[in-house]
Every structure is written in structure tokens, then in C-alpha cells.
Image (tube, rainbow, N blue to C red; front, side, top):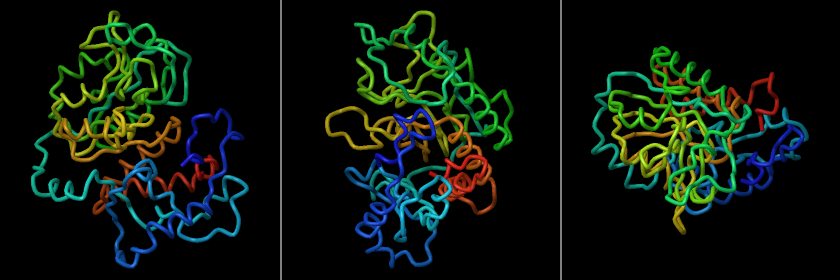
Length: 333
């Protein structure tokens, strides 16, 4: 897991090598013993527990490597478990039955709403995660001036445009720049949209002083209030009303826990969006870099439009395309 976390990566030379030997050993212990039951299966539902909640099982390795890759291109030859199966993570076994028994078909009529590229005054950045010493005022509202100084993310605008085009929507389906505010989002009829995508900074609970729950960064107002301080927190997300088949959180650490002691992964933003009414989510397990995030999400929606391709398979195909990108060899890592 540590070999996949780009938190301290500033240049390509900083990217740590991934321990394919240990990944194979883990595969032998937790997956190989039951794989005979999956003969002919292409889509696998998993309910991970404990530490495994922070490890996408697709990065396990199904064949022993003769040696660890010595360059980025070497990872293209790695036998990732994701080459064999499309993976869907469930919060519990019973949730699958509940989703199939009680989940009604979406009545939403509009294909897409994209929220991102908030108006921020910091230097343009490529990473969608950050750490600050303090961001909150004594009354529990974020200091909007500090929020405003976060790095701008212009790549997210192009990402949302591409996602919109993939679903037959135009720029009128985007909430970006000064329009990407908590106030506007909370006042919209969000039940009208089948797919929602957030492309912005993601903050983990406890990462910032005063931030007790995970949040997504939006454009801050001139003066902060409990209703709008530029941070859409998990508890605020849970109060939204959605009727979405899919919510895409193209930000950092959106699979993280809710910040309470002993909380499990997927208990923060992910659970909040389920409460709000989403039937499926795409979330990240670590800080993400914009160009890779754009490549994954746009290719994924393009694949999902093909007949017979489900969301998990579309995500798998997007990952495989990323690995084979010869213009960016490090994407194979």
C-alpha cells in the first residue's frame, strides 16, 4: 500500500518501486484459495475488512515475478489481478441484496452534472490533496481566506468537459469556477441528474486542524457561514437529495474513513453519498495526480457507453489503457 501512495512524490524519480513479490504473496493468501470458485467469472464483488479496505485488490499480482521492475515500462508486464476481473467493493454482503431488492430505477432525466475547478487563488497544482496547519475559525466555520489560498486545479475543468461530452451533455451541465459553490449546489434539484462528478481537492478527516470529517473543496464565499464556507463536508453531503446511478469523486482520499475512532474505510464521503441517494460511487484510496485522474475518468465513461459494459468493467478497461500509455510510461506504475 505504501508503494502506491504518491504523497511525497515531487518528481518521477521520487516514485517508489512497487513490491510485486509481496503483492503476489498476499494474493496467494487471500484470493488464490477461493479462485477456483470464480471459474468463468469476470466481475467480482468484494467486501474487504480492516486494513484491506484501503487496498484495491486489483493491485494484487497473480504470478510470481522473476524480479521487481527496474523501470516504469516493466510494470506493463505485471500480472495484476485487475487484468482478470472487474472489481466492485461493497460495504457489506447484505448491502448487495438490499440494493437489488429495494433500489428503484432512477427517475432522473438529465445525464450529467459536473462540479469542480473551484475559484482558488493559490498556485496552479497537479495534486488534489493537501495538508495545512489550520483552516478553521473558533466557531467551527472554515476560514474562507485560507480556503481561497489553496492551489487552483485548472485540469479539472477539461476533465469535467470530457466527462460531459462522454454522456452527451454540454458545458451547461458544468458548475465550475465562481459557480461551483456550496450555496448553489444545495439549492439545485440534484435528483434530476443520473451521473454527478466532483473534480476538486479532497480533504481527509483530521488532516487539517479543526476538520473532524472529510470534505470536498468548492469556491469559498466572501464571508464564511455554517451554510457555505467552501468545504462540502460528509455530513452536508448526507443531507443532499440525489437520484443518481453514479457519483464520481475525482479527488484525493475520497474512500477514507469518517474520522471517528476506529472508523472503517468507505465510512466518510462514500457512505454520505449513499445516504444522499447514489447507487454507485467511484472513489480514490490516496492522493491523486490530475493527468492520471483525467485519463481514468474520461476513458471510463467512454467505455461505459458501449453495450454490455458495466461500470466496474469500464473502470478496469480504463486502468488497462492507462498502463499501456506509452506517452506516459510512469502511468504503468
